[in-house]
Image (cartoon, rainbow, N blue to C red; front, side, top):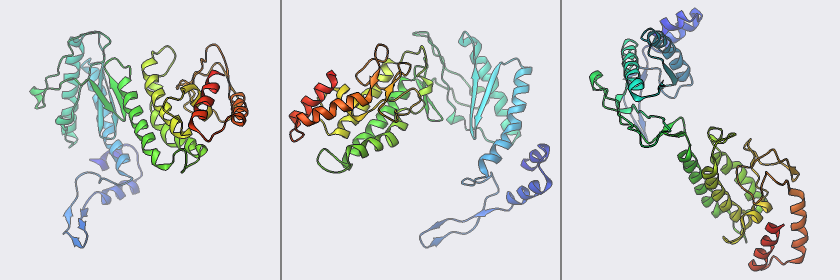
Length: 335
């Protein structure tokens, strides 16, 4: 079947002959310490772990998607299909569930029949369904697939797809909660690398935070952080995580003011997800994802000035005691 698809797509005969030999007559053995099993036939599939497997899978599934689109159009289903390797996705839109559920059922049946024709297996136990709706207290119905030998799909509250967490209202609060928790766990684990008296220097801690924690915390932030979107709840989760990171970087008390310690750490995260490279003035058009003790709507922030004030205050207050450090942070936050 795959060689016929390659020929239909116009691949050269030498490539078709190569895959005809590559996919036929394969065998595998299992090894454990000094034990080596006998050879087993492995003529099914394209073989996991091979760099060619994703490419061959995409080429094999492409005609299936093409045929489905034609059949869905003929049946007036108005259903779209997406595929990422072996993960398929059916999307149906409508004003009521009475319109979307029949379309999903018919589309699911068409896909199942096509997969049987292509020699593929539909894993019904891994199928999931979620209804996106902003209406409160709606019915959230199930999708009964028993007529085609599949179980009844119960709608999920949260749906994970390609690393993103979707909720029914598309607020992505669960997505931010999950990755902010992971980022916070990473910050706490970094505590073993240094504290206020030994270990990594503050500059090295900040570099580690920027390199390892921020990519986790801001993963997929374009889904929920855009103009006009309500982001107060999501930003508060990320701000709490960054506050913990600033305390670890400086070795300050947990009661230290957030604005002061984050200013000293120079933690400004822009919409682009990157830290400001220098201590220059940040434009008013940039709204930070993490609050750093200032308002981006009514004032600009001079990073060089705040570091200069900190340098002057450092000469006046001793760093030998934690009480003077706390007083220093209070003064900086007031500035």
